[in-house]
Length: 111
Length: 113
Image (cartoon, rainbow over all chains, first blue to last red; front, side, top):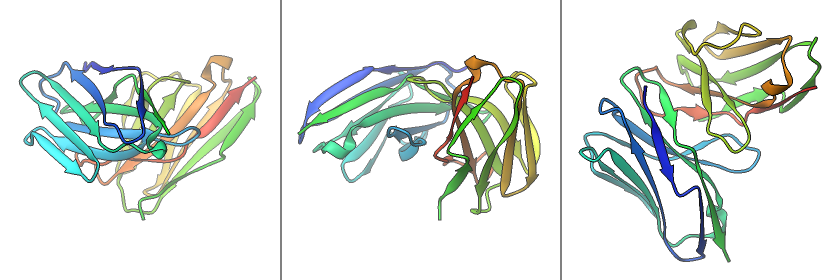
């Protein structure tokens, strides 16, 4: 089955700085890669996603890049704000349409 | 409206109790999911329903029994649970199993005593 690795497990940045979270996947058939933000006591919320036929996607301060050859994808958050503090999960979806999640990154933005 | 609702928000039950979790969406989605999330871990898939039929059961113990009475509603019936079953139970939905965005509900925090 698919195996998704995510790094780092914790990340602290100063407000206004950029944050980068990286994930790798094992199944070359995976074709959909969402990123979820989970705040304490809440369910995961989709923040951005990318399909395997696209190399990069941007939505305001958030961007995702995908390297299919290397089987890795990354989340970039620019101009971080305290409200960006949360746990972020990457995920990969296989042809069976099941999501496999990374282990999560706890992002702390220091005011 | 991209909302998935779950009730109750919190549930405490003994090992001999029978309880149910409820999930509802009114987005016209035909695929619905149950996930289990332990503390500081990612969500783990339990069940998938597609067009009200169970399509995936990820080897979940029979003490968890899912039910999809209609296209908007998903239940998870609980019986004879163990303390290690304590977790956040998340429901999610998407338009169909082959489409992109899965929308998650806020979860039910379950504690088994």
